[in-house]
Length: 116
Image (cartoon, rainbow, N blue to C red; front, side, top):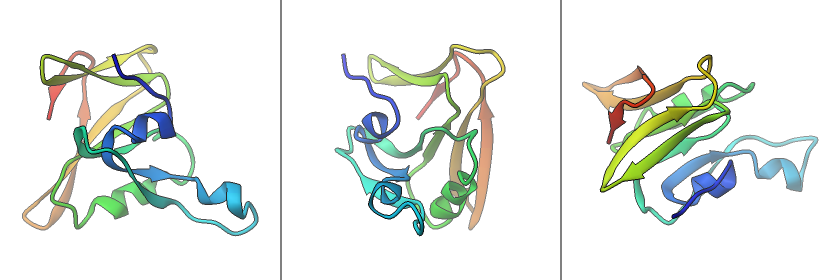
């Protein structure tokens, strides 16, 4: 079993949307692309419900891989090579972001729905 929250979740993906620059310079920073191990063939944005996360959408505009954006208390679970969404809180959401015909498409995912 592999698991992780925030940066610990990003590490399993190809890359993730990270606020790690804040720890270096809290007065002047921006979100960065943090590269992971690539075990999950997608990009990831944890804490998608928090301020500033819309920059993940911009980060995904020219990507060929899909993006998974998870609000707090939402998870992506892999079983037998398939990925599905689980919510601890029914009010929280998860999204699949992908580019099609040069347009970014954001799809809200339902709990239990399989993605990737």
